[in-house]
Length: 318
Image (cartoon, rainbow, N blue to C red; front, side):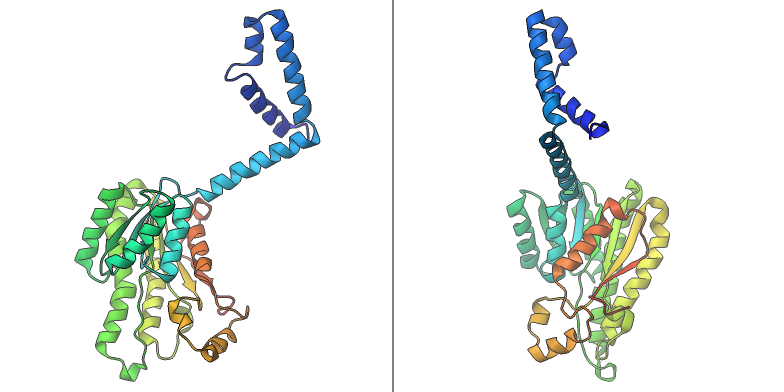
């Protein structure tokens, strides 16, 4: 216990005691009596630090410092989250903001974008701005991307979460339903990547995280369009990861399983039970589970992970 950590803590305590001036130096500048007094204080401090309570205090300080570092790991970073108005996107935006990121809250409607931005700003002033855009419109997304860059000065994290469903058996599916889902879920991600990648390449850093789905891995009857869009996102993720890896930009996908959202809440208990019976963990996921996975992939801890698909599904896909 009296090794390097204790010595470090003693040094910190001495610096506090000396209020910016070393005890040794103060001893030379003061009278002999004052010097002896300082030496006595010094011995008292050392005795406390090397006691059990002192070591505990030292460990507690280290834990607090580590916790503060973890909690604010996205400080001075800017994150774009599409589909941030509700559900998974909202949880991701709030989670990244809680760890220090400034957020560009993107949604199809201004009301939804403003709702999430307002919630974040209520906790940390001027930490979020709202942007309304249809992600399937390439020209509009390029304008919004440029505006976000102008407003924040940089873009460090892009989370492509915006998505829609238009379910139906393939033989009855309209072309409009097919196009709407592919244009939003897949083309929308492409549009936003094009709007930010030059900036990321220039700063030689960045995190791009695409929200796919387990349906993109296993398929689902009645969701051919949705499955195609989410499977396409996985291929897009892997190709983009290869293109950008040399610039220290990582690209990964998160594939959620069945998660509690406003859509799943509308399901009957019978349907919910049928879904849960297919999940080894026996329960639906929470939006916070997906947000935690995204926060990890966006962090420095995941700097050497790229081109991967992280399933967050309670064991559905094994």
